[in-house]
Image 1 (cartoon, chains in turn green, blue):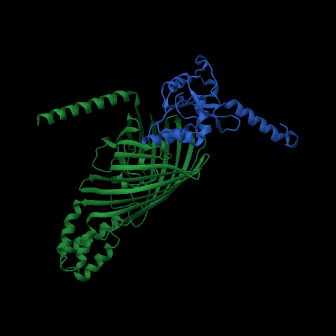
Image 2: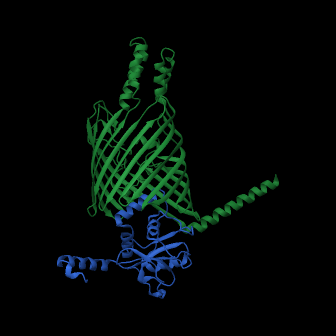
Length: 416
Length: 171
């Protein structure tokens, strides 16, 4: 026992020595950098909110963000990367400007073309998913909302591992990435846990053209506390008719497998660039169903320090589209007026399905101006058009909803 | 010039102007490494990948690469990235912001002058840098020269030996 303790102490000392010498050696090998954006925005019409932007006044938090990045070499081929980001607007329970760890991983270069990373990383759903907060790195005020949708915000990070392979084939560069891990987020009564997320992507670049396809599978547990009483109520009527069990299943998203697919392309020809992406999210199981699709097409042209751009896009979310038929069918099993409590439940459920099924079209015109070598100014006007009394990705705040609205935003984007 | 008789005069003048313009803006750029680096040559496509951050280990030897940059304002910096990767200042900075903050790897370390670039390459067996070919000294080994005339790379000649003191500092 004594001997083991002794060895253990020795081991700890050895480990400490190794770490100290590694960090001392690597002192020159650490690099620090960062990025920041200051945004100001406003929505044109009453009754809707876009992030925290409203119609009554300009607000400055939703697009404001600060990020710090550190990277150090621990040994030959082995490095540690860390990135902490504080955002003025958070989808989840995080406070405004509360620092969050977006990246924290060890990276090991196995061979010139192969790299392994372990730790926390951004989920690479789309072309710009890993750098959505780094405004300086893209032309827009924010990546187009029809694809970089708030619905995906809970899935932005994962803890796990990935392996990348960079190679050439017939003068084309090929990047492949495979990843696996898990993620967990919460907001109010909503708890989301994904275990596992597995996926990959491949991108091909030749001359002026880049093409990218990504495929991700998530097994998600989504618990929405406020649905639980409704689910229980339906379940208790299961013996009356199977349709009530189906309605209960439709409100329960336990261990549901989701498939995310995205296809992106970019054509850069001199000062001109055309970028487009399309995505599709499907539930692979019976029951709870919340499929979404969206796309955008963006055109930009650089004229010296000015880059005007235009974007068109569309987004559609269909929450439990079968539920309407099921509820109408349930009236045969239990007609209106039999149990008032059940009538109210079905009416609320119909309203919920309508509220969470929405479609929007957007048009965006914007301008990016290079002010300094590491500072740019952007201004953007985005038009939203909604269908069927819904408000798309905007939050409805009153009974009267505008059929369309616009959001005006300015940002200053810096890298250092 | 011997084709002048069959070329229309305006076209000829344009060609001369273009030649003059490129001669003013461009000089040969030497890609330099530590003298003990076992590599004797480097392809232009590997050089591109190194400075895009897509190739972190030297081909064949597998040693980790430490790329070095001149300051952004330096004429050779601008010329190097324009010629090798067809990237101007803004595009390069945007690419690098994307590359760095998406956790893909490290950016080249910056040196302040040509003299510092040469001495850093002379000290570090894993370093790779670029300087105006006229600044190359015997302290470093040239792997590749990006020529002015064609804009394409040629295999390195025997390194010109020049006393270190003659290396011109950056403006």
